[in-house]
Image: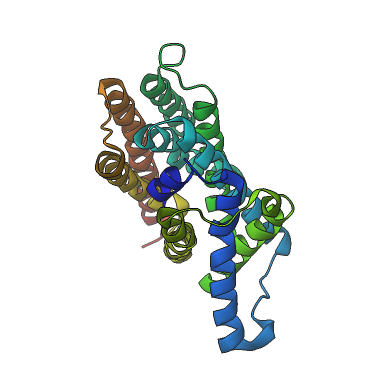
Length: 278
């Protein structure tokens, strides 16, 4: 989806493209739920959190696609990977987990990795770097909010709510800048933005209904490899030495927080065993 968005954003208005990305899944998932469950399909618990999920998701997408317009694909994705560490930090506050020193160490290391990858003041990043960091923050918050309600509602209903709220929010401004596609690539890519996003987010919601945020965060790093591949295949770009070094630092910060989490869980289990009377 990111590679397709970067490609189409060269010629199509960004806000309108994001609107279509949320409108298409809203229509598809909504139609399916109406056909299979009737008109009570849209009920979901904790409506305030559902609204926040939709808003944080659409703002994250707007920020990230802005970053894609100013940065190489792999650079934008690399910056966004401060997100897994942000997920752990947000989880500490919103999911009732006690913040640990390791969280802040990993977050600081992740930001150092971002600075290395983008080389502010040396490479022309500007608004692209700010947008990528903002996207990571909003998307991390979206993931934690999703975890808060993932076991309370059906995954398709959660998918519908996130997309419908995003589509409704952008309906205020997007139709004024939207236009009919001008060429074959726009006709092909614009609908698929919604399809790619719909399938990807359904998989993510299912994952967060099964496992906790800290466990899933490291798996997001697979996207670095995928982004590198599509950046090379579609745009002919490969990460330079600074981007690779920043990537490694960010990856190390995520693996460090994962290892600390597992050690903490192991110590907790050991304490439980030792406290259990024989």
